[in-house]
Length: 326
Image 1 (cartoon, rainbow, N blue to C red):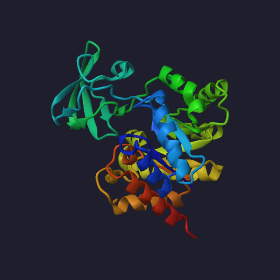
Image 2: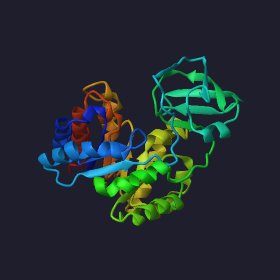
Image 3: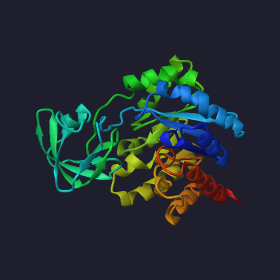
Image 4: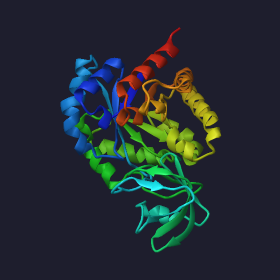
């Protein structure tokens, strides 16, 4: 079984990475929504790969998570506090968001931010911006996820930044591509063609199921992708949250029936961003995910920005291996 952490400020040093590999980590994810592959190349060569080899992991997986058609808040000069009941401007003169969202949104629409930690309602549109009421407030950081609930926004499979990152993938030792918001076979084939043109036929495509469109076209995605990633963050934005466990179970079942490896990700040990010990619910979630057939598990913020990246990896690996015991 594979165990992945996400590269970030919390695990940037070779010493911390080495402890994570010794705890059982077998690969590292780089989230390209927050950085570029070029910016990580030196650190990977200097810290990641030597740390893996020293821990006995000779061929660690290196997974890059492309930007793709994912929607995110732009860069902020400082975190923005959105007060519940208050008003906020998105777009020109306010918090930067993608232009297609501004064009698609209508009064009454709701916008979820940061995996639905914050929720806004569109009240009106003014000169390239949206005026919104804050229904669920909190602190908003740069580059957090954004979802215009109930609306499909037409975006390209690969951005210019994605293509630039793919140009560097071979030299950086990338083994897997996490493809976000896969909508059907065409998205996977577009990425496959881009990899082939760069001599990267060996790189595995992990298709992220993150919205209803991906669910509706799951059969053709299963046919075309190497692996499936059940990405519960944005997938949970696309439906009432209490429906997510049943959808996860159904996705797991269909992957197992088709013999398709799948990765489970998002908030596996979310509390460990701040606490050294997980909740009972979190370890039960991991255990059940393994029993449902997951071939890999991935931590995100727990290792990227959390206070306890090594402990989080240790709990992840030990819980999963306990589930695998006869």
